[in-house]
Image 1: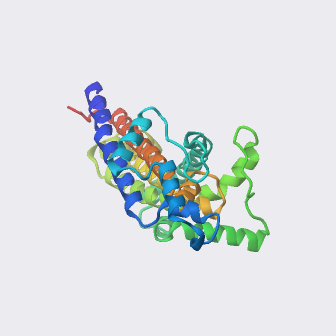
Image 2: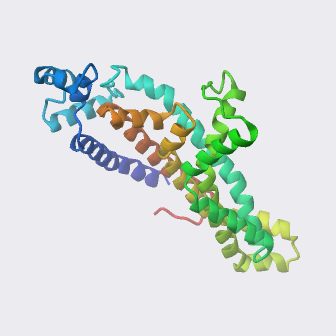
Image 3: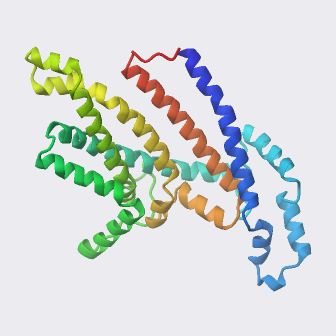
Length: 319
C-alpha cells in the first residue's frame, strides 16, 4: 500500500505541471489585455495612450516572454506565493483564505445532503423493484439528471419569493460566528448544487444493490434464515457502496469546480464568484491560482477515495 501511495503522489507532479501549462497558456491566448483593460478603467478608450499601456504591462510583468512569465510564476507557486491580483493589487493568498472555506463548505453540504437522500432512495428502489416506490424513485432520479443545477437554483429562489415571500440572506456570516445564519445562506445553494448529484448517486446505488442481490453469498445468507434487514445491512450494502464511494469522490470534485453559477445566483462569496470576476478582468494570477488549487484538491480527493475503496474491499490489490 505504501508503494501505491508513493506512486500516486508522484503522479501529482506531471498532472499539476500539465494543468499549470494549460491554464497559463489559455489565459494569454484568449483575447483581452489586462493592461489595456486597466488603462481603460479610468476613462474612454480614446483617452488611453500606448505609453500608459506599455507602462502597465511593465508593472504587471506581461511584457516579458511567456516562458519567462511561466517560470517565474511556478517558482513563486512552489513557495506558496500566488502573487497579487492585477486589478486590486491584493495578495491572492489572503483572498483564497477567505473564499476557499466558503466554497468547500458549500460543496460539503451539497454532497452530504445528496448522499443522505440518494443512498436510502437507491436502496429502497432496488428492494422494491418494479413497484410504485421504485417508479417514484426513478422519476426523481431522472428529473435530477435532466434539470441543470442553475435552473434548479433559479426555481428555488423564485418559489421562495412567490409562495413564502422569503429569500435566503444575501449577507454571509462565518460558520463559527453565526452558524444559524450561515446555514440559512448556504442551505438552498447546497440544495440546488447537490440535486443532480443526488439523482446520479441514487441511480448508481440502485444498480449496484440490484447487482449484489444476484450474488451467491446473498442467496446463501437468505438460505441460512437471516432476516432481510440483516442480509441488506451486513452483506449487501457494504459491497454495493463501493461504486457509490467512487462516484461520490468524482462528484465532489465536479461540484467543487462547478459552484460558479450557484454562487452567482445566491450571492455566495466563494471561489466561483472570485473566478468569474477574475476572468472578466483578465486577472491572470487569480485565475491561475484558483484553477491550480482546485486541481490539487481533486487529485488529493481521488487518492483518498482510492484508499477508502481499498479499506472497504481488502480483496483489492495494488501490486
